[in-house]
Length: 359
Length: 256
Image (cartoon, rainbow over all chains, first blue to last red):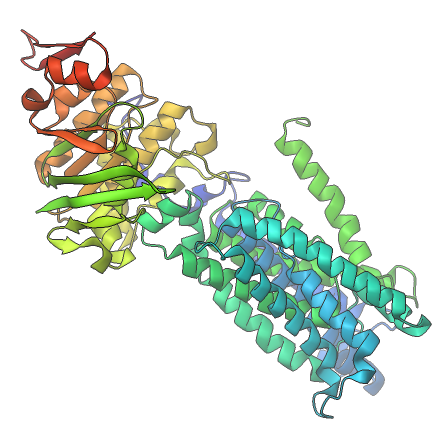
């Protein structure tokens, strides 16, 4: 018995084409969308390298027509900053996509489960009380990064210790513990702000609003290794995350080790986000908004979503940083103000659209 | 080959929800779990699926303890359709069906997808969002996904099981019959079905074996004629129930 027209095997194979995995812009193939997103990424990277208080023509450097000053600005200042923006943007967006899938909640992001706050608390502790910590001279340049990663890992450990107390790691408990950790970290951050002196307070404020200005090749290396490790661990979970959307028992019935998956995603996110926060401060909305934007383009299956989020997250943060640098030259606007200014209205629009109040 | 519970007990907050139940669901057959509300049908099904651990006793799948299987091995040997139909993101029906694919060439999987899609009448809404479907349509899609997990990943049918928890709860009379007829045709190929059913007439019509549960205990196991007797059902359901053989379809007819 069939309901409506029967479907032939050939027709089904055609309709099972990955093109149909995207409900919006269905007439555009997945390949073209990928090209479009990559083109935007390249455009953002090029503008980020070229534009600024000191204009650098990338093409002129490529053809050997640039002055040595331009070359130095590009290689030592602009390029590490662009690489950092791309890595941090990709890390935050990919972690957001993975955590939204894990929590089966479109509002989840690294900030929600307290990872960002933990990293922030660690870094702020080091900024304010770093002088009292005896650190070997070789590690001194990385002290804030180490403290931020330590903070993110400590928070994740605490999250697991409390949420898994009853044996099984419940998603609701993770979210509730995340809220409590955020509040506790808020207390710690407030305390350190209170005891900091004027110059520290200025650094803290700028750092709390996010900045890519501290980028240099030396500090990039360890952060890059950590962020790329996080990437690899997250990207390989795409199929399990798809299956998880039917429910935890259902995913297990299809062969997914849900307990292991949860640990893998939470720790990989802690790694990526901890490293990102340590290098660039608190940057909001990327982890929350980018996955939504990518679902809009590529659909909801996690393979396209996760790769897409990494590329779009990188593009968005490079763009935001370029705007932050060129809006009021020679001053710099904190980059989180730009990401929030782009992200918050977009997110509101998504909520309104999904509720059918607009359309 | 069979899916068997041996003296299984399941306790929740110190209270036995299932108490010393033994049953054997053979492959190639439909075994129906019936009983009043709160009899422990779903808990027993979840224990047989491997989700809930019994406080005592064991579950054997083809003679091997369920705990000795890896999750991936189990996914190939049995699939489960629960009562949950909620999903967070806007997956299409086709994407949900494709979740049944475990490994191997995707082309082969897609080829085996087509007959079931036709049989269950899912073709018109393959591209629709799963969340936009009615409860009954969702149940048909999730049933198809559970069946495909067994049929589309391998040509082996014997020793494979599909466990269904109230698969007909939101279906109209036509789709109830269609879904269980689909089970019967797959059972004919060698797959074993363990189905929680509330409708005793459907159990009478389609089940090869019925397990009647009450207050966590197995009251009677056997063919529909052995289990569906007027006195036993009236006693268990605490209401007067009549059972007669239907003169035309030669199946039992249960009515109050």
